[in-house]
Length: 606
Image 1 (spheres, rainbow, N blue to C red):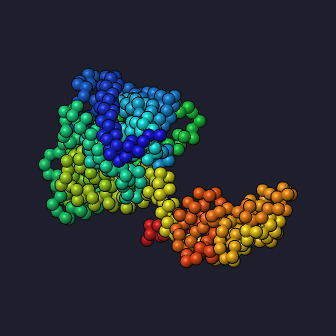
Image 2 (cartoon, rainbow, N blue to C red):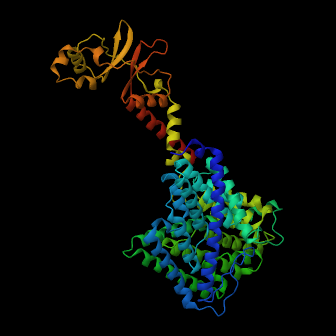
Image 3 (tube, helix red, strand yellow):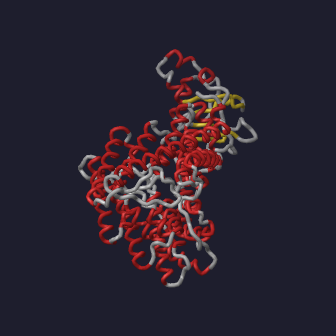
């Protein structure tokens, strides 16, 4: 058992900084690994060089040396997904999928514990999936990688569940803050992604800030680039209140897109989960479908920019922000990419590949926002249509992931679009409220009260809010005296419903006799005839008073392992008012919790 110093707050803060440094190195290794595989597979074999955001550092020099080979674009995602699924099946099944849900589930239900092999395997599987063209993002893998490092460190030091959970969240913050060059948002993301309500996990905020800042410095310091991920030109401003109308239209258009994304993603996952095939084979089929959708989008659009439905797909967003996608043909291209990205992400990850869902959400939301922006520009409602592309990125993920605060900050940090904060807040608020129960992360819980990690805290709080007087019903109590023979006590027990009997001598409460104690001597004839209450009673009597809270009463029950406690008068401890039963506390707690949930439901419906 580690000493108190290892569990102290300053120590946790120092460990969070260490976790951030490790997460930053992990993010670098992930970025280099993904860049190498993209260069070897998509560029070297298929001849397709995905375009990224302009602020992204080119880690591996070189471009495609030949024309795009369509059959390799069809086959490569299948190869990557198959290899990824097979590796996770062999070594760590929890490494499949999008990763963030696994970290959330570990926080709430797994004591913050992640197996040590998961971060490494998650990185390898995601590099294979994305490097071979599978559709997905980097946030899921890097969140699980950082979370795994944090959890592993806490476990190696022998820390408890709370420290494991805190360092797991700090690792998530470090990974996300580095990979997206958004240290502030990374910390908020780790604290907000755990819940579906607009709630932050307060106990992880400061460790997450320290980890995210450290990770960001390690990552960007090595690359020598601290700028934004998406570079913007001029004209990204909000200076006309009437532009809130097209932004409101954008929010309303994002809602069905969010619903489609979530329903399609989990619908594909359920459908393939019922298929009677090997897991890796299913992933291979999903990768094949991903390649097929990409080729279909390319054929329909007649524009290789439609291939943004593969891999991360951020290039289409940068081109939209640069004003390179305009007119009604641009609207068609962006909507085609948005729909194609929904399908390819569902096939890639829902069938067993390994990648995140935040990146595709940015592409889908940005493409829908860009399309709405171009339409509104054509109608003369907005000056710069690309502004709606940025706000669409925010609004879509805020509604799908229930993270309005961190999403606004993250997209702002990624783009430097601080002048669009007001419309971003407006759209994210609308999509968060109106999206209802649509949720991209299935392992989120509603709020702290519904988290198994905080269950004990809320039981204690509810019980402390009630007293013995609230649940105890005064009643006549049968008492015995200390000189009463055991055989007479047996007759008293047989004629009453009590299990515990106060022993009262001349008005003084001196002890307790339980029916269990009496039963132990029933067949011992000599003791049966000679023993008296004083020989078997428990002293001094353990009691509760009407003003005691139920948490204190429950602790009293647990300290002496009995099921009934005498309730005595607050002014005179020799006056027994009745018995408090343990099951009365359980019933009171259940009723209180049920009433609170009913009140919450009524508030939600109103």
